[in-house]
Length: 634
Image 1 (cartoon, rainbow, N blue to C red):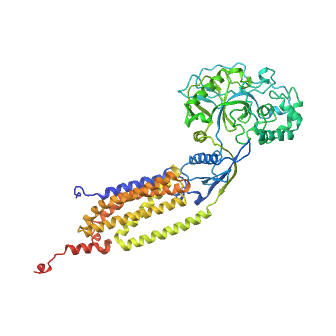
Image 2: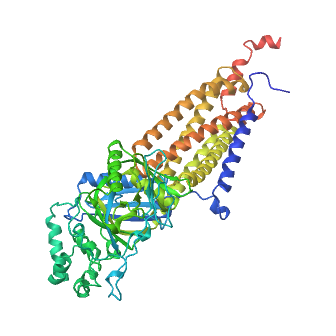
Image 3: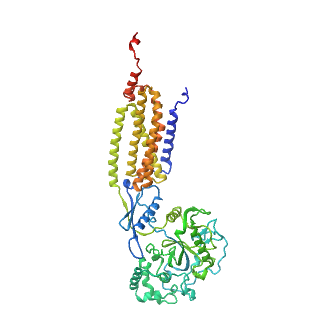
């Protein structure tokens, strides 16, 4: 027989709840899961529960050695925290320590945090000269090296040419301009030979005459004493890469430069770093951070660990980039798409025009690409990401391409998107930390929570009898929903469960218990007012529902506000509290009310001793007794 119109069908709500459980635990066991049953049911735990990786970064300054300002250190901490959070909602801890250090803590051992402390200073510099940086030119000459430059470059009119070999390149986006950026051919970087042209001896028209800081000058004097006056004088007199074949005596004079440390090489003038063949890419690539960060100076950097380039002043900076995203290009290769700001787009167009026309003949023949055009190096910190040849004036957005994996492209885009660090850092310490203290706190906390829940359940059965089973089953279902959600969220968005998160869930159980009291006490009030238990259940639900929703809404609002304004483990507490509150509302509507409707149709529900309605039913019985018992006897 169908229920009367308007009467609730509890089976439907229970079926919906069952469907939610089936879908949730299918995701738990089969979505991104592998290994044993225990592995599939294990949530992602935090640093205080399973240990993790802790990295200490120390702020450095290659100019004066002074510690950074408090504002710069805090800005750097915020940028690093944004980069770390890109790993997911992992409750990473990024805190300052002293006036130089930033400490990063992530759950999970052997986490790769190499790139989060990199400065990510992006510079676009024109390639002025190229030389061998592998060290082969510093070996005693056996024969006169012949240039390998291409004499007959093949013209290209493509706006976005395909890569040549494995050489990285940058291209214009489909919406941009009348040209493209082609990869430099490996043959465009010949072994250097002495140049007698005036352009080789004279500095580039854009060379900087910025004064050298006193501390750098002092460090240079120390290096001069280390290599000796004769070696220093010989290196300082070079106007082009040394030709050891024509002057073998230079090899002995310049040999001490090969023993310099990367820190010592960093303080040498750019012309000396480029012209001395004993200074190799192995030394240049290991220079301290920010060694070539000055945009107004010519610098030396390497590409692929073998080609050494003299680079012009940086005409376009990372601050001129408005946005960066890792995308797939037309060849299904990962690239980093760059969107320039308004001023940045003008600077980029001017730079590509200058490179395409080789204005002032600033680019040496050794630095030209396969089509005889200047190249522009994309420099990130101390390294060249790519050095494409400019094939036209670019008036639109561009791409940085290379042999990127998705992880590499996303990491680079994230660094550029969040901005460059105002302070340079060196990694001082990286260690795996254990969770001995956190594990003992967890055991103590779970024991306390278990005892508390046991007392609540005992009290519920003692005071509400049959209704106590509703409380018990509701708490069990809420716990299962929360647990399944934690496992799925840990895999999908990287949510990490910590002690603070467990505390948030325990607090939410208290809120859930309060909603039981509101409902059951309202049910007793309805019975006292003369309603039958069956009719009192839907009436009590209507009147209690508004209060339950209001109470949970306030808790959820508090969790949202706390999540927005807090950091670290407090954010995890707020997330867990909000999640458990939402799932408790699901249990309230899809289990608690339907099961109470079903209980109201049973005979046991009408018994005060069994139902737990206590004195409410006897009071109602007394109210319904006839006022004149004698009349009844008659």
